[in-house]
Image (tube, rainbow, N blue to C red; front, side, top):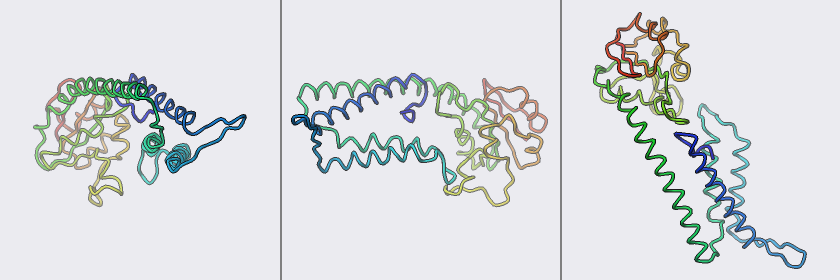
Length: 256
């Protein structure tokens, strides 16, 4: 259920409860509709809905055997992990008493409301950081190249690195080129870097910016360097080739 967890470890509580709820429906259906005890023999009742159970089981097997990344793309198993739970839903028994249904409906609503409250809280919290993050967009001139250095890509978020791709905001209003745009470095997105366009390694930019060779980057056509996070060492390297034009909190903007 980890693929449903986003901004803090506390959401694991909700996902564990949801998993237990789905397992309850599974065994309820199995015991009350699919299995009948006649004498000492357990008889299994099969019908067309069991195809949903079969498909769900097959996808669950794929989840355990598929690699987490392939063909240049990632999060394969994270995506697959959702399908067994969705596909099995039509298999669950609806032959229940009204009281039982009301209890189940109430339980689902409580889970949903709890998750909405959780997500809303973190939306408000992370929005404050995002406002700080985009506060210097107006400084970037038209048609310029920016090098993002996400030293703090997660911020207060546990699992979702909201600042990895947010540097795109610095290129949206001005036709700029974001050297941290991972889509342009793949073979399956419509956005491409031009052939021969000199740029630092994308993986290093996004996932190991502290190890980036700043001197080598200075020989490339990079107009701005934007640092999110604090690290005096890398800032001292950047300022040798770019001028600090603005800073606030965790944000630093340098211009050629």
